[in-house]
Length: 203
Image: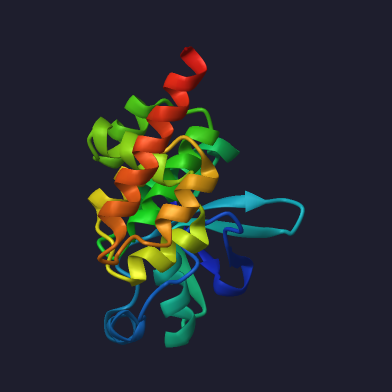
């Protein structure tokens, strides 16, 4: 069993590659820590260059503990390698209920970039392989247009439909209509044009 060590809060820092930049509302957690202390240890790794410890698991607890005025925190010092650090942070954040579809997509893509297979991503995050596959397609869409489409009320199925278009130009064009009454028509027109161009090349 890993030994728990009390580490001064000034020697801790957020992991720079933690995908969770927005830690959310910490008011309730801060109040709980003020009343009861930190009941669950953090998992950290040593950063020898900075003489600090990087928080891999427990970033919300870390920030809330600072707000609560604590001076040290219970930590397990892990020797996990860089790939495992990033994967661990991604796995932890993939379980968040407030994670958007696009944030999921970005997280899955980061895990793929680390060398995980779709099956391994599925096993580590608890999502089905089909969900992982669909999200990875969404990760390739233009982020700005994707976000705007979601803001207009585009559904997940609408967005997955857009990934059927091979051309990035066509995807972005149709994304501008996602969440509007004209989406179906634009999507159908784009698919028909894509099929026409494919048949034209084959003839």
